[in-house]
Length: 163
Image (tube, rainbow, N blue to C red; front, side, top):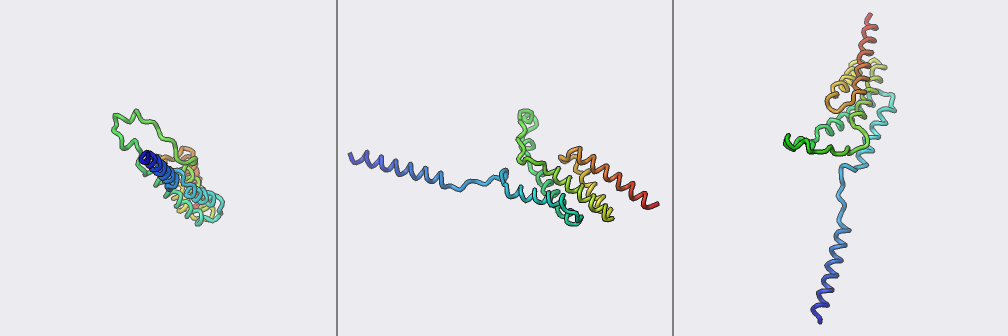
């Protein structure tokens, strides 16, 4: 009778260890839900739009464009799957509720506008052109059209001032 009792005790102890080990394991941190990194980006974005100093906005714009470019460069599942099987794939859901490209474009447009207002026309032109150049890399048509309009306005203002 002692042997079955030992087996029961051993089974209870092993089960307890297994359950406690599963509950005490550190949880994996997912980049998908990394709220700290997102809040840092959101803070940079809101800071960019709130400032009236073009140098400060330019730094924010550079940071946002870098993150946006990095997000575009990440390999997608579709590029790894043979062409014949791609039609069977479904699009994965976006990882953020905001569009990093749109945040970067909006900040660049604001930076360009600030730069133009203080006579830094080369910086303004560069900011607007970066938005236009990103058209094929996930940039929305809205921001590209806005950047083209601002470029045209800048060129007209420069021509008028040259006369």
